[in-house]
Length: 157
Ligand code: FES
Ligand code: FES
Image 1 (cartoon, rainbow, N blue to C red):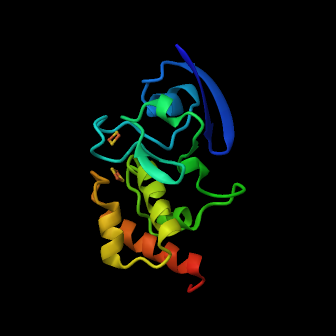
Image 2: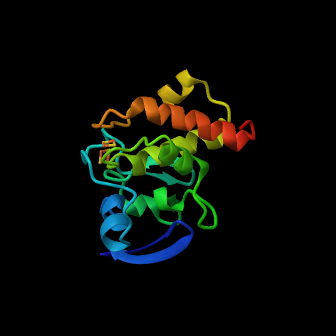
């Protein structure tokens, strides 16, 4: 057992855990977050994605020991001050999620894009979101919601 400190959504946690435990298990089972989900467990679907120092990682295969000292942000933490993030508002407005299982990962991946590129083209959005699987097939509404959120964040809408 190791002692590992990580910051999750701005809150510091000191954990007694084996360093090779998947980060997802700590986020979901120890801390009790609902945003990152277990889908494939093989880094293939993106349901478990979180941001680690601003970059997406697949938390189902990412050892918690490698996150020591890092800032982890989950779907619960992408908005500031408790207000919904424009992405979250636009996803709801578009009624994009169906079962919603994939969206904890989708929303952090989309937030990563808009942080780096405030004006992504449709092709850039598709390329960035590639590898995030939605078994409900909600891609058209997802893409439209990301475009709309980008417009709002730029002040175009
Ligand atoms: S559960 Fe991690 S990528 Fe599928
Ligand atoms: S909304 Fe059901 S898997 Fe994406």
